[in-house]
Length: 304
Image (cartoon, rainbow, N blue to C red; front, top):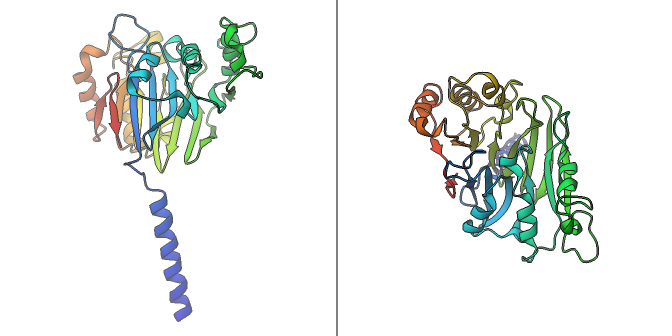
């Protein structure tokens, strides 16, 4: 009897310890918005970009849209601290600043290689690794930076590209550093190769939809019980045609947030067709999702 009680107590201790270990360390992790706009050049916002801070260091960069590198500088982040760069897709407003980050890194103390992760190729878009070569490779548009891609003796570090397979319903996991993992899944963004990202840091989970229409109906499961869901709000609820094929409506965002039971919803990637109706959008989402709704702005810090 005493042996059984001792075993039971040990099991309870192990369960309690494991539960604590899996709890989100809210004092160690935060999200910062670098760019909350889309591809427009007259919306007063930088294009898509986000930072995940861990223990007061910028550890993961998600997307590198136009202007995001300027906001990166304003944030006080150090490129040398980054442990991974994640791209949701290769549209200009999500990836165009990548050469700027790499060129700027020449003036930093970075010496460790860094992983660049993004979608594989489809019939329209190159793979992330090919995109990197086309930009910075030996025959790239910025070939003078090719040491960072095809590392030579005088390069401080190398960018190591990984292409996420575009297989519906599959999730792929990558280790970025101690206590940091990134998971990706193929999402529907019209004809564009695209993935969503879930970054897990110190027991916390932050999910980035990128641009997607949710036609694959995989995102609710992927975002399940995330501490933060960052969702693109590029179209209004009455969107039709190409816009609807590319992006989620507010009603779809609300349905996903409710099903996934996310703790906080951050709306971002605004365009001039959604910026003036933010209150309307919030009202639509509120009909299904009862958690906090945060409207992203450039430089905004979101605590968990």
